[in-house]
Image: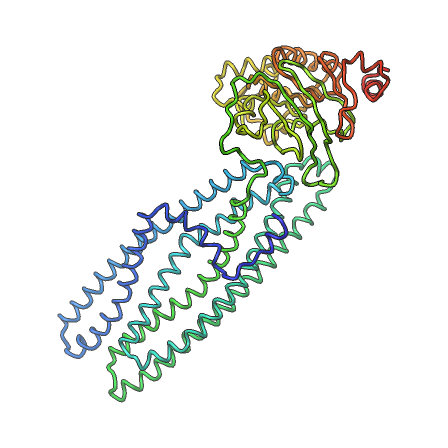
Length: 590
C-alpha cells in the first residue's frame, strides 16, 4: 500500500515463502502423505536406469527371451508403482495448496475487516481485492504444483547425481563441474524475477483499483463523457503491468535457455567420452546406458528447477504483498481486559476536552478541546457549516478513530475500555450516504440484526415508509437491489437505512442528514417514523431540515471544530449569531 512497502526487497528471493510454513504445518498428516508419495515416485524413477542396464548387459548378452520378459515385467510393475505414487502425490499436493490459500484468504480478509477507517483512507479497495484474488492464485500454484515439482526435481537431481557417481565416477566429474554454472545464475536471476513480478502485481493492483472505482461510478463517468479518459488510463496501467511482466518472463526465458544448454552440452560430452570407453572395452553398453539415463534425469531435473525457481520467485512477491496486508495492525486497539457495558446502555454520551485531526490531514485540526454531555434519552441536534466537525463527532463516537486528546464516553465509560462490538451494538446509524448491498431488500434491512424474523423486517419497513415500494418490486422483499442500490432512488435508499436502524433497536441513535434525500410527502411520513423511533433513545442529529431541528431538546452550533452556540431553536434565533444566519439561509428565518 505505501510506497515504502512496495519498494521492499529482501535479500533472499524466496524468503517471504517462509511465512507460509505456519499454514502448511496445520496439515501435518496431508503433508506427510504428500512427501511419502513424492519420495516413492522419485525413488521409483531412479530404479528404472538400473533395470535398463540389466536388460542390456544380461538379457541381450545371454539371448534369453524369458529373462528379457522378466525384466520387462518388472519394468511394468515399476511403472504401475510410479503411476500410483504420482497420482497420490498430485492429489495431496494440490489439496494442500487449495487449503492453504483458502486459509490465507480467510485470515487476510478477516484482518482487513478489523482495520480501522484510517487504513482505508490511505488504501484503494480494488488493490485489496487484487491481493485477495490474483496474489492468492499465484501462491496456490506455488504451494501446490510448483513446490511439489521443486521438491521432486531436487530429490531426482540429487539422487541421479549420487547414482551417476556410483555408476561412473570418471564421467560424473564432467556433469558435476557444470552444476555451479547452472545454480548460481538461477539464484541471481530469481531475485530479478521476484522484483519484476512484484512490480507487475503492484501495477496490476493499481489498475484493478481504478477499474473498480470507475465501474462503481459508471453513471457519473458516462454522464460526463469521460469514457475515453478512463479507458486510456486503465489501458496505460495494464500495458505498464504487461511490460513489467514481460521483463520477468524474458529473464526466466534467458535463464531456462542458459540452464538447458549447459545441462545437455555436458550430457553430450559424457555420451562422446562414454562411447569411446565402450569401444575401448573400459565400460559396458548397459553401464553407459544407465549413466546416460541418470544424466538425463539429473539434466531434466536441473532444467525444471530453473523454471520452478522463477515461478517460486513470482509467488514470493505475491506472498510478500499478502503478508504485508495480513500484518497490518488496526489503529484502533481492543483493550486486553475490557470493561463490560450494561445492556441495554442507558445512553449517556460524554465528550471531554476532545481534540482530533484526520491522519490524512495532520496539519488541519478538525476538533479542538470539545466538551459536552448528552443525557440519556435526550435529542441533540448538531448544526454548522460544512467542515465544522459535525460528522467527525459520529466517527469518534463509533470509534472509527481515536481522539488525539480527551475522552469519549458511553455511560461514563471511556469507549477505549470497551470492545468495539460491545458499544457499537448499542448504536444505530442512519448515514447521509446510505450503503445498500447487492442482496435482497430483506437482507439489507436486517443487516444490523441478521437473525430477525420476516415479520419484524416487514414491521421495520412499514415504520420507515419503505414497505409499499418494496412490495411493488418484482420479488418483493427478495428482490436483489443491485450493487450500492443503483436500482433505487435516493429517498428509497434512505428509507431502507432508516428501517435498518429501526430494526436494530439500539438505545443510541445517530442520524446524519437522515431525511435529506426525501421528497416533502415522504419526509413527513419518515419524520413520523423517526419521532416514534427517537422516543426513549439518546439521539444525535446532524440535520439542516427545520422539522428535525425544531423538535430537538437542544441544539449545538459548531464551527471550525468548536461549539460556539448552544440552546433551543427559538433561543438561538434571537441571539442573531451563527445559528440565526444559518436559519436565515437554510430555513428562510431570521
